[in-house]
Image (cartoon, rainbow, N blue to C red):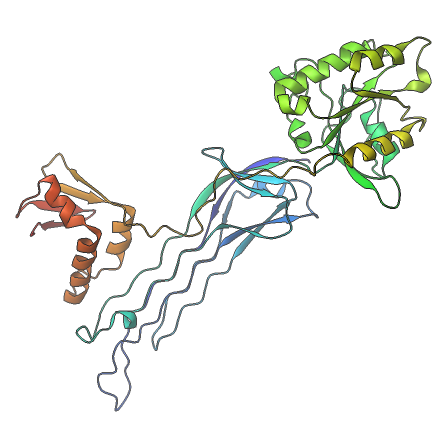
Length: 421
């Protein structure tokens, strides 16, 4: 089954906690603190994989998490870093923020892309030892990892896209110019998913062509297969607009040309303006008439080439003309990310001070929550560390600026205390 969209949740690992430990050894007095640091959490990488052609793997498993870092140990032992997580996707997959739709990464290159950095490990208590604080009984906890809800959208990497009505002969043409063997049958919507084929023109030139399921009038409103698969021609540098010029399906070739271009414009005006070669197919069964002259005049200045995919007539000339046009066109587009995601949790000291409904000052913030995890409220040295952290961050200054007075109650999550300037 061809799956080209998926939504998953990705999380990097949490850093390990620092250790509170003291060196204990026979005949060694006052060994001092020796708690080791926590290990770093695992990061999340995105890797393009040419062996994958669909997002099927993400249909059944939606949550992926890198490994957490291990806690530090005694004797200065640092915890083990968490294992990184590599998400393999088909080449050409776009990774977007599911909430905002902003592009995070275009998985088109060969190198792994760091999407989410793991949390840093916390410091052990040996790092807090000073000449005046020789026995710190506290350590830092590891940083949390990052989480993102990612929308995956596969856009095939192809130089040439074949577009047109159902039964125009796109699949037959792809099989005629390449080694691809898509399903070919004489009924509408034979092709239900895009097909890729490598077209070799000569020893020096080749290109990738994509057969896109047929459009019909009203596709923009959901008729037929709608616009579901047009994303796969977004990157194509050249379009082969395949038309059944025989008219045996009861459809006028000129009207077919206009209708498909109108649907392309409704999907993307830029795509509708993409260079095209109009392929007048099924020339071996054309009725007598001037259809080629009328198509050439109607489609000008775009080139029109007559072929028969079924009889293999004119297909080599078409492939050569496509390759010649590609030589003059820019390379396959790689989309630029809308913003660069955070590589690791932010160290900013973010907090808010508000007046609660019960006349209590409420201090909240992600930074404050992280600091409070590191504090042992039954230890005097740890409380002094907490007090200095609040003063350096400007918590007390902001309380005074808001009107806090001595004796007022201040609440920080589950902790309440009397304010003393």
